[in-house]
Length: 499
Ligand code: ARG
Image (cartoon, rainbow, N blue to C red; front, top):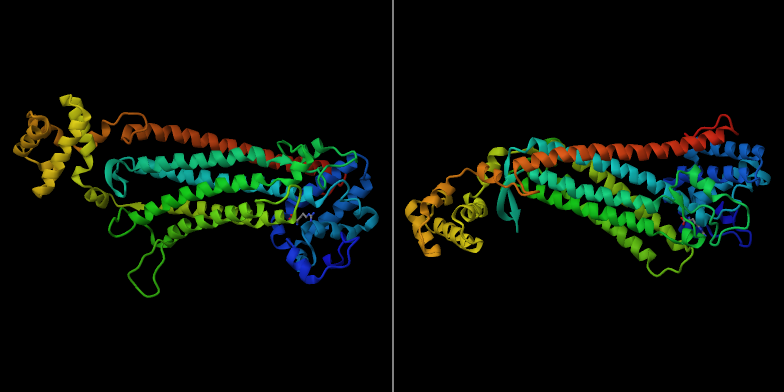
C-alpha cells in the first residue's frame, strides 16, 4: 500500500487522499506490459553484471509471471499505489521476499523506468498508427482508380474553379497523408532511444551495461546523457504535433465530403450503415461519423495543448508534472487510430453520383482551359485572352445563354471589343471542344488529367507497397527484439514466455 508503501522510508504513511491524487495507476495500465518487459531486461542485465544470481533472477521472473497471470488484480489494487512501478516491485517483494525482491530496482529509478516504458509503448503505438495510415492510403488509391473517368468540379473559395478527374482529389489526399506518415515515422528516430540506466538523474557508480539493455529492448540507440534522458519529453510533443497535423488534414477532407453529401451538392451518397437518423425528423440521414472525425481533431489539438502547458517552464530534471504527459499522449493515439479506421471505411463505402456531378458543372468552368487554347492558337498574351474569355462569360450571363452556345455574332463582337480583331471562327471551334479533350491537353507535371493521374496512380501503388514492406520490417524487428529477450530469459528460466 502506498500509504505505507515501499518507498516511504523517511516518510510517515500518506493520507489515502494524497495517494489517490498523486497516483498514475489509471493511465499506467497502458504501460504495464512495457514496464514489465523493461524490468526483465534490466534485471537480466543486472544478472549478467553479477548483481543478481541466476537463482535470484529465476525467482524474480517467476513472481513477474504470476503477476502477468493475475493482471485482473491490478485494477482492484489500483488505489493503493502511486503507480504501476510501485505495484510491480511491491508484488515481487511480496512474492519472493525482500532478500531477493529488493534487488529488482538496483541501479534504477522510477525516473528512468517510466520514460523507458513510455518510449517503448510509444514506438508500438506509432507502428499501429502507421499501419492504419497505410490502410487508409490503400483505400484512397482504390477510390482514385475507380474515379479516374469521372470529371469533377474542383473548387477554390468554394466556387467552381476547374474540372479534372475525380481521381485527382483522391491522389492529392494520398500525397498529403503520406507526408503525415513520413513525419510520424521520422519521429521514431528520436522516440526509440534508451533512457534506462540513467537512474534518478546523473547515472550510477554501479557497473551496469546500458548497451545491453538497449539491444534487449530493441532501441535504435542510447539516450546518452542521463540528465537529458530522465528530464526530456520532447519526443511526446513531437509525435503529438505530428498526429495533430494528420488530424487537421483528415478534418479538412471530412469537411469536403460533408459538403458534397448535402442534397444541394449530392455528389456522393453515404450508405445507410454509415449514416445516422434524427430522433424527430424521419427524413434525416446525417453524416455524423464525418462530423465527429472533423471535431475530434480538437481532442488531439487539446492533447498537444495539455502537453505544452504541462511542459512549459517546469525545471529541468524529473518533476511530477511529467506524469501528466501520459494521458494526453494515450488519448491522442486512441483518437487518431479510431479516426483513421472509420475514415477508411467511409472512403471505401462512399458512392459517387456521376449524373449529379456532371449536371452540377457550370459550362464556364472550362474558362481557363479555353483561354489557354486561345493563347496557343491565336498567339495572344495571356492577359488579353483572360479579358476576352471574361467578356464571353459576362455576355453569356447577360443574354441568359449558356457559355458554350454563344453565337458567331456575339463572339465577333467580343473579339473586336477586346482584341480589335475578329477571331470568332477560331473561338467557335475552341468552344466546341469537349471537356474531356480540354482536360486531356493538361500534360504539365502533376496537372489533373487522366494520363497524369494514371501515371501518378501507378507510381503511388508501388510506393504504397514499399511503405507496407518497410513498416512490416520494422514491426518484425520489434517482435524479434522481444523474442530475443524472451530467449535470453528462457536460457535461465526454462518455462518463461511473454503472454
Ligand atoms: N508515476 C510517475 C510518472 O508517471 C513515475 C515516476 C515517479 N518519479 C518520482 N520521482 N516520483 O511520471
